[in-house]
Length: 249
Image (cartoon, rainbow, N blue to C red; front, side):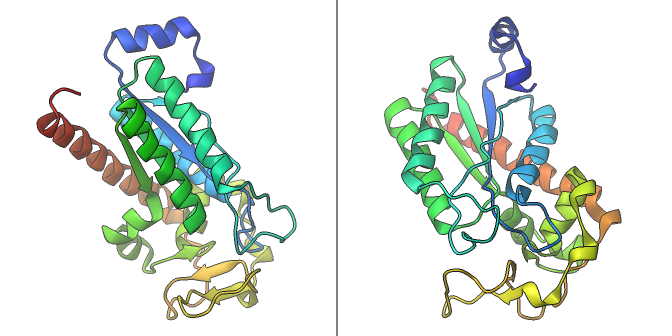
């Protein structure tokens, strides 16, 4: 149920049938190593959203591709919009969907920069305070690590343009993975103590023991499906708890 492929009458019918949830994927355009596309942060949540929308019977909105690129801005092809622009864009989308009668919003975030996270959170808070629209924000890669999915299936914790994102791109756009361009020299180890603008590499490992990126194409489908199942369970908990705690919604 992709919103932009439906007629307005089909949307009306879905609402009448009780479809009350919509999914908004949000990404950014920035480098992901020499082996992954600039749109990786948009392609992955979009694919997750496609599978999730079928699983939870929700409407999938067009992906927001532009986001708040920070320390990787400046590499060829990167595009940055300011946090307040992203916040306002997301809020206006949420406002429109709430106006039409949708009751729950799921934002699938594909980009982990702190500025982007704050912009999304600000839009979500505003939607709740002003519209009484409950919003669940999902950072898919963090959830996958917290639930042990990444380690159990891939044997690594992953990182920006690292094993988890590489495998996820295999699941949604395998033709865009370019192992022949991969270079270990692009790897940067994440550190809260050391920050630079721009970063000296475009692959960021969260764990210094991760080593090289693993190109595990055969695990791609299983990995993404496990992530989607975990998100679907989180959405169900979110909605059930709200209905129990705030029955007036």
